[in-house]
Length: 116
Length: 108
Image 1 (cartoon, rainbow over the protein chains, first blue to last red):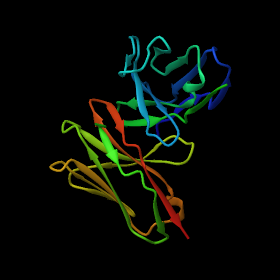
Image 2: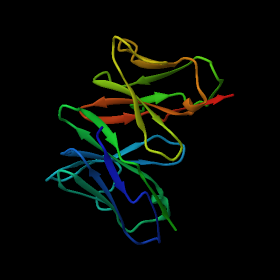
Image 3: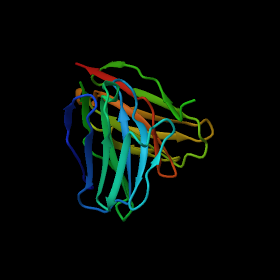
Image 4: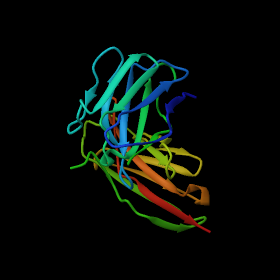
């Protein structure tokens, strides 16, 4: 089945630093990837839709200058949390939509970010 | 109002029990629906799609009621391994909206 690899799986960083999270589709091309955030005991919240070769589309309330998304190739999207603060600590998950014969929506394994 | 709403639970049931979850959605234009399962500190994994005609996969049955705008998941003969959080998901133009999840605890 479709595989989406997300890296790193967990990261601890200091306040004020930036963290980059990678999301790769391993065996298919993904023109569209999605980034979600999940706080403890809450549902996944869509942050942004990442489009290959164009600007990401951000959901209301998500700061595009803080959460930088780059989708430079058909298999890689990156999310950079800039100037991280403790309130950014969360579980970040990417997903990719496969639009070929094996249509489906697959999640990466998630990145647990802790900002200290 | 949230796009998708579901009872957070927890539902505590003994092994072998039958348990059902409901989920309501607010956008009548939502095109498709899914149930995902999420284990603690893991990513969600697709459990099954939900069709208007209803669909069954082993011990799991999912149904969609467009008139009342809800979907359901029925689990028969619960196993300890069914303990997880079950997420109801609606899809509208390739945007997926997640419910907050219903936690199921199956006890021996």
